[in-house]
Length: 155
Image 1 (tube, rainbow, N blue to C red):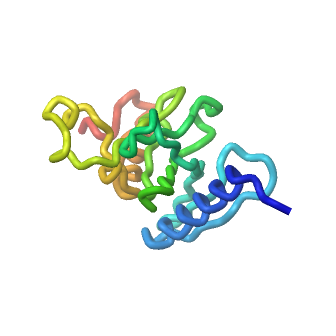
Image 2 (image 1 turned 90 degrees about the vertical axis):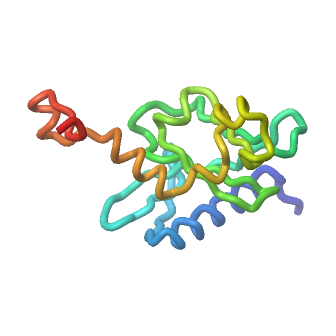
């Protein structure tokens, strides 16, 4: 019995992301049932909902990839993790970074692009777990800050 290639790639993406999260000092749990996220990453006792996506190549350009994020709303996912099969690389972005439709990354280095493109491109290697975690914390408002109307980062 043959397997659907898309399902196989999806499983490979989940395993690649889980292994990368473990390398980033996380404990990883898999969800069972219908959730908007695939994995739970436990980083220093903070639980993060991670939605894994296999990145699709765009327009037959070997360096452009995207993940589709149109089925998600704020509060359902903490971090999106994309896996680029052709590069064997994982990238991470917060819900705030991905937008409501799709998120695109470029596997070229900045030195391989025009100055303009390098200034606006989402470079694959820039989207690390550490950076996504930092971005997630930058956008988190503590309950005390909500009560006073102050952003904790503004002091």
